[in-house]
Structures are given as C-alpha cells and as structure tokens.
Amino acid sequence: MVKLIESKTVTTYSEVMSHFKEIVERGDEGTVLKSMNEGWKKGKPNWQVKVKKEDYYDLKIVGFNYGTPGTKNEYVISSLNVETEDGLLKTSPGGITENDMEYITNNQDILMGKIVEVKCSGLSKDKEGNYALLHPVFIKIRDDKNIANYLNECLEIDKMISELN
Image (cartoon, rainbow, N blue to C red; front, top):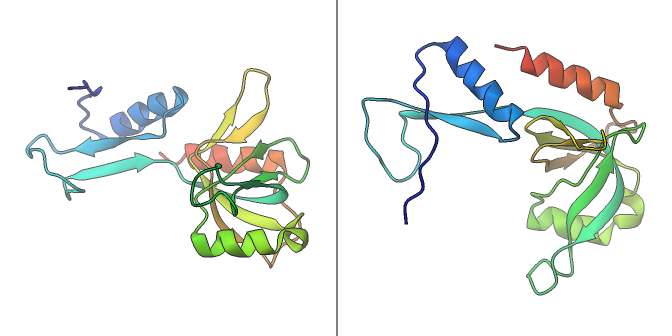
C-alpha cells in the first residue's frame, strides 16, 4: 500500500514559514524539511528537520481521567482536565510518564486545583468558539505557582510565538 504525501519545494526561510503557517491553519501539527540531494533513510536522518510550534502554558487541574479499560493504564490517571484561570480555555493533556501517573493517581485530592505546565502546538478554537490546545502534553506539576494563565495571556503568548518568523 502506498500513500502520497503532500510536498512543496521551498528555498527560503520565508517560504518555509509561509508553508508552515498554511499547514497549522489546516489543523496539522507541522511539516518536515528535507534535502533534495538525499534519499530515504529509516529513522531520523540529519538532512531532515521537523518544523512545529511549541507553546507552554500553566493551567489549573479541574479533573482526572483514568486510562482506557482493558489497557495497562486502566487503573491509573493517564490524562488530566485542565483550564485557564478564567475557565475560558479547556484541554486534556496526556503524555504522562508512568511514575507521574502513579503519583497523580495516589494524590488526586491534593492535586485538584494545582497548576501544571502543558506543552502544545498552539491554540485551537472549535465551531462553538471554545478554546483548547493543539496536541497538549503534560510536562510537570508547578509547585511554585498557584495561579494559572488567563486566556488573554495564552492568546498573547500564541501570537508572539507565531510572529517569530
């Protein structure tokens, strides 16, 4: 089975960033730059570069989600429900390590309302106008903070990162 992958020839940084923005606006995570002078190689060859956006936000835990029934994570928390301080952006980051899953599962009472750092590929908005994060991943619990980012702060961060081209 063969699947055709979209490609586009670019030669300048400006063209790369323009193509990247097109991809992100379609809801995809990013793109990969490849040398025209190299062939295919299994793995991550040094003539390819992944281009994707990485934003970091501090959000408040408002709920916990156990893993899928029938999987090894069935009885541990495998994702969180988090939101901005004003509740206007909600998301559920995964990517939690096994050690963190065990800690979170055993400490839900004390972690409710705590701040966590979340990495993502930018902000998204659904058909009803609700904000969320693209591809959210749990990074760590922020014991040094007790107030999450507000939506307006997240929008400012996202805009600043988008303008770095």
